[in-house]
Image (tube, rainbow, N blue to C red; front, top):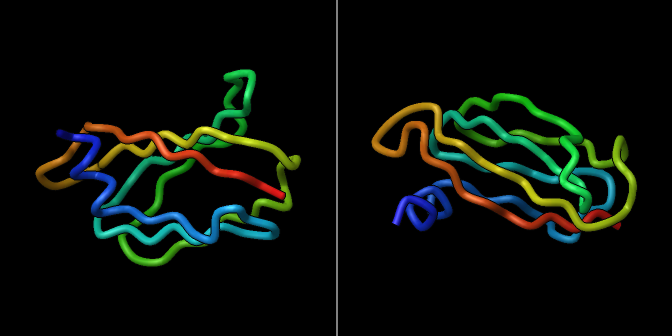
Length: 86
């Protein structure tokens, strides 16, 4: 249930991404990006609203992103998103 709630509050696009990915969130979040081997590639916090992550800093491939709510009714709950970087 928590996964569904956070996925309604956070959108990542375009996907696949080339130079950047937009992170649109209704709440403050922590975002962690993992590569296909499970190694952490990047971690950071974002305020609510539209934020941009430059994917030119990472190699092409499939990534798993873990989004954790930092506030509100979903605080400390997480959701997983797939991200493809071309």
